Structures are given as structure tokens and as C-alpha cells.
Image (cartoon, rainbow, N blue to C red; front, side, top):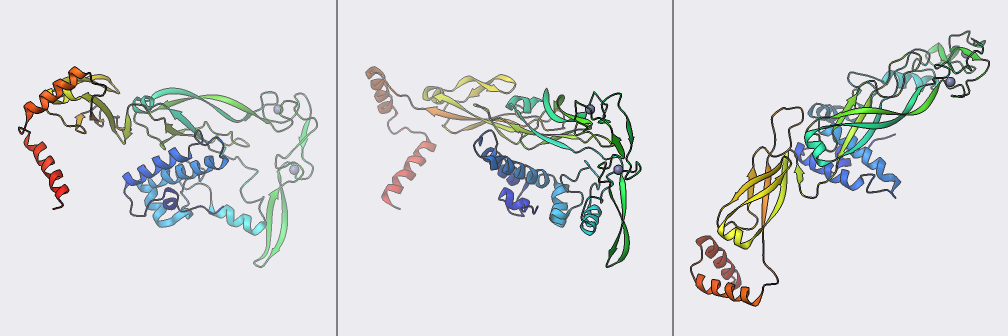
Length: 373
Ligand SMILES: [Zn+2]
Ligand SMILES: [Zn+2]
């Protein structure tokens, strides 16, 4: 039951910046992703743990509450209700006193449990959003008996033990005096009903396990660890209670060419040394398609060019986008013919001492490093 400290889970310090937390999460998520760790049953739990930690620490409000209350925060993650002070402390104390069972109003309407699933999406789906469908396994009311648990046409009568209330009262002596404990009726399990013949479809449960297709609207700009809520798509409620919610946690697949850093995109583009020396106009892939980019003469390997506005859209902020950073890599030619080698030697001798100032200072520093001063 005891939870590890969220900072410890992500391996970051208490003073870490949102950026450091994001980086730590991305690293951990990649490491423990269940798809990568098919043979390690512990990985899924680890993944859940880091995702939960990230959900809290990436949200400034939740993080501030966590810093104050730790895991005791009544409004913390997974407390049942989506927002507001749900679930709670009192029920737990009650259960402690009376040995459980009777604490939470078992006989009244109960909200269904929330469900949480992961969804893998492509790099571009995360960038631009998409409509997708997921198949969610969950409990639904049995169509045959409409939730009564009785075979259609057979008799359902009142439970003789609790007379239909679903609860039994017990008087208990405690150090604080005599108290009345209302516990769930053991005969009928709290339903208050006596079923003559069980429904053949659900075996008297009143509910059946189904796989339900649910439409998910992925917002543009989501990143790994982001979560969306689909209200009322979780588990069915009990005794007329509302359905729980469905939460989808996104895991964004890596792209072969683009690398994401927040809302910015990085990529590497090769240049021939002739293009780098003489300059050129090249086409660069972006998530919007090809974009023309000017390479000025004398471009050095490692130079980074910025394509403004070709990055990832900001989540929930229309018309704001990051940039694409193009890292150029000058490729040294290999497998030169004898003729080409000769031409390069000619080039080298023609350049002689007339090297560019920047290059000269580089070479001079190298020379002085050899001389040891
Ligand atoms: Zn049934
Ligand atoms: Zn009963």
C-alpha cells in the first residue's frame, strides 16, 4: 500500500524544474514501456508508477499540494472523483473500527470505478491530433436480465434476512460505548433480493464483461504522459449510481527523422562539403511537408538553422507552435576516384595560407595545444 515518493520515482530533486521533470519522465517512460518490456511483468507497474508521479509533478497545482500533503492529499490522484474531494478518509477510519464491509454505503447508489488505459499514438497524431477508437473491456449491464440477475420470467422476492434493506444491524460494544454497526446483508450480498433462478447469461451477477469501442478525440500537441478524460465511459455504477470516467494516457512513438523536445522539433540534415562551401537551397522535411531552406556559403558542420513555426502546436493553445531546428551535418566524401583526389589536392594547394579567419584561429588553437601552452 505504501507509495514511493514521486520525486524518487522519477529520480529528480525536489527543486527540479518542469523541464527536468519532463525529461526524467520521458526517459523513464521509454525504459519501462510495456511494449519494450514484454518479458518483464514488473515493467507495467513501473510504467504506471512513473506516469502517476509525472501526472502530479507536471501539474503545478497538484505538485504544490503534493509538496504540502504528500500522498495524504485527499484530492490526490486516483481518489475516485475527477475533481473535488472524493473518496475518503472517513470511510477508511470507519472500516478500521468495524473491520470493514460496512463503511461505505454499500446499499446506496455507487459511482462506477474510473478506468485508465494507455494509448500509443504516432508522432504526427500527437502533433496534429486525431480521432481514434479504442476497445475498452468493462462491465456492462446484462441485456438478458437488465441487471436484475434473475432468469427472465422467474420470481424475485425480498431477502428474508434483511427484509429488502440489504443491510444488517449489529450492536457492538467498543471502548467508546455501544455502537450500531450497519453491515451489508450476508444472505443477499446487499441487493435486498432473493433470486429463485439465476440469469443464464450473467450467472446472477446482473452484469457482463464486454469490449466496448469508444471514440477518442486526441487533441493536437499531446505528449507522452498527457491524459484525457472521457466522462462516463468507465465502469458502470451500482444501484443506479453514475458511470465512472475513462482516462486515456498517451504514449507517443518515436519518429525516425524528427525528434521532439517539448513543442520544438529537431532533425539532422546531411550536406555535401561542396554544398556547405558554396551554399545551396535545399528541401527539408517538416511535419507540415517539404520546406525550402537556404544554406549560406561557408556553412560549418553542426550549424543549426531554425524553421519558425514548424514545430508542434501547443496543447490547448490555438495558433501557437514551436520551431523546427535543423542540424546540418557536413558529410566527408568517401571512395573518391584518382581524378577527384587530384582535384582536391589542387584545391588544397590553391588555398595555401589563405584560410578564413575563423578556421585559422581553430587551427592555431590546435597547434598551441600540441605545443602545450
Ligand atoms: Zn443477466
Ligand atoms: Zn438481505
